[in-house]
Image 1 (spheres, rainbow, N blue to C red):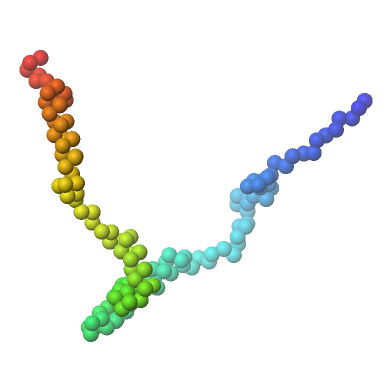
Image 2: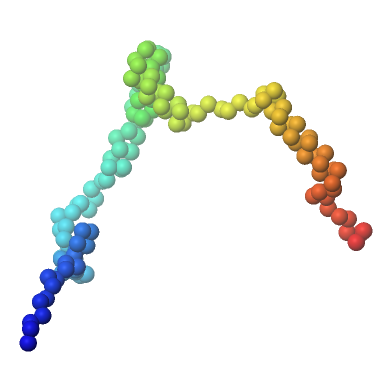
Length: 139
């Protein structure tokens, strides 16, 4: 009898797939036993705490209490007004994001074609009685 050649066993565990034997077993020890300690703060909390602290600053000769974030915006505005190009670029990006320019309504000259089209449509509608509701009493 001729022996059948067995093809090499193809791996079930390729790119993006892992061997189930290496998976974390439910109820077993944690694979990250040292993990983040309880009570430690994440980046978002640390950021809010650091920039939310109130400080007293002298602005235009007056003492004002504000958060560090507000103070940073005041300093950015001062540097930008003083000619600092980097500060001006940052201010410009912030303006585009948080204070976009209002779109002006079109001038009558720009809308003339639209009005002409609308008037022509209204005339056609009246001429052919399109989109007119029929009276229920006629019925």
